[in-house]
Length: 302
Image 1: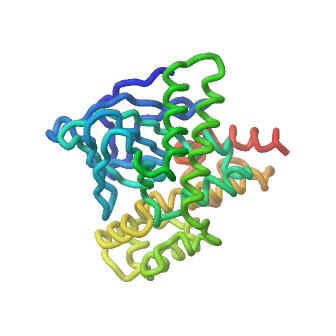
Image 2: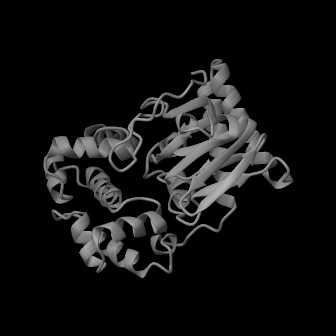
């Protein structure tokens, strides 16, 4: 799977990138891309559920995430956390190698030890939207080397390259996680100063099985829908509708594994989703497989 040239981003109304990165059995895609400071050469605001690692090869790249703008030079890199909105442009020109990969590439399933210890503690760090790596900092040499290893293995595509890519990116995730203290609970991953967001998150987790929407979530926090969207983006780098969906899908995954007598339609009803087909569509966004496939795999591991 050699590095590819990026095409125009396909985004939904919330800026969510619709193009899958890689395949279900190897969810990783590598890019060789160039950007300049013209509208046509910029990478627009977007987000996805995957991790992203960008290594600048030539020129300078201006990278922005909510509240932060940084300039990366040749040899520098950045690691963008999952579900974090970001945009980029050349300053005035940049060439970079980009790797976009699902957390599932590292952990296999979200109920594995790799997910619990390494992947989810990083995903939940709302205070770490992006990690910057400088070629001038000896402390960043290891992470930069791991990025290069993953890029080279992916581009060479020799037998076993999938193993080499997964190993390098797994160690990269561990390196990034080691830069911050892991949170002890979900509450610590939420901005401690955002009381309203905590209230709205509590509302979602208590009422996810009901037919609620962004308006209901906003009212629970005593704000309008626009402020609700802004607060979620600022504190959690996601939207309230995505937070609701992920809450429902986590519960659905738990029921699929621990309630084998429940049909997929019953699981859908239990988590507030209208029907098994809707559940399958939503479930695939987070778990890259159908509910039936997830249940089958879980039984095989039991």
